Amino acid sequence: MLARGVSAISRERPYNNLLRRLSAADYVLIAPHLAQDEVEAGDLLYNPGDDVQTVHFPCGPALASYLVPSEDGRDVEAILVGREGAVGGIVSQGFLPAYTRIAVKFGGPFAHMPVSKLEAAKLQSKTLRNVFARYADCMLAQMFQSTACNAIHSIEQRTAKWIISAMERTGDADTVPLTHEQLATLLGVGRSYASRIMQGFKAEGILETRRGTILVRDLAGLTRRCCHCNEAVKAHFEEVLSGVYPTDQAEAG
Image (cartoon, rainbow, N blue to C red; front, top):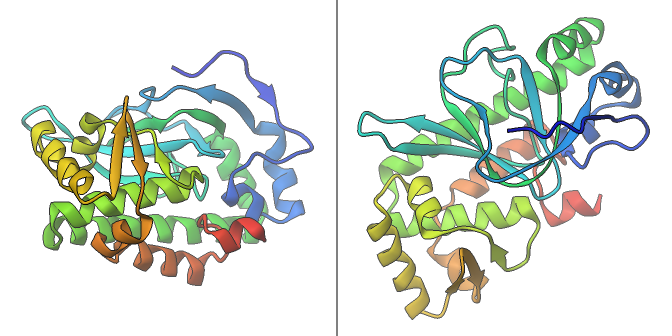
């Protein structure tokens, strides 16, 4: 679970692009209520049915994932959320129970604050409401695109998509801390199937695997095998909430 050592965030903003997108006046409204913890991979933020009382903002290379439980006991990954966004109380405004499981995919710093404080701040600022409404729209676009991707694209295309998506959010040029079992969860397939897909990429010299880590040896080759779902989501982010989705240009800006 979340660490106990909570500290208030005052001067320097957390390394979360959504928080850094806020104007100075809007950030002042929420800064006193923000705290930050180091959170470990595998930690649960919400289970289905939990009261959504806290908004979590992944920072830096940290990643959270939405997991939908299935009747056979497996969790199927819906979307990844990194420093471009937040989880918990974004679409529902925190007044409804969690529908999915939300877990930490890659550990690291997470900023967090009570949903009630965020909602109170939104009532004070139209521009703050606008930023979070726009982000909610982008999150829904991710979910829609993920649904379409699962329906029409091959396992190989989706594997390449997830790996590239994780690389973009963690900021690592060629390494993704992802096991075969975690990849299988992302794809909604069995571990043996995911391993066969990885073996195919390894045979082509595109990827290597080492102790729970995927090394990308041929990014151009991986990109050619990828569907265009990431690009569609990034284009929507850029149109609706420019500069928030992690890209080389956004990070440089």
